[in-house]
Image (cartoon, rainbow, N blue to C red; front, side, top):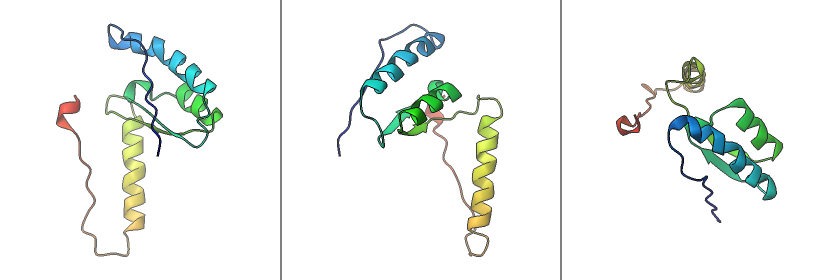
Length: 104
């Protein structure tokens, strides 16, 4: 398995991170990322980013934090519902998730 790491230039403040993300996505357009897994931190969890990755035929993992309005709650509800249906006929006592307290 091959791995490629890309990074934008260092910026001051979280708001400036958003300004560098388009250049990183544009760089991906020059590479053949079809079928590759692209990961981006929670700052990049945006519809425009997902659309660009879909257009590039890349697989993607976008981080999700609790401060993203109702999206976090919607996703949690989706997983809770899927867990209930998947394990409805089993003796499973529960499903848990782990939150990294150092992630802030």
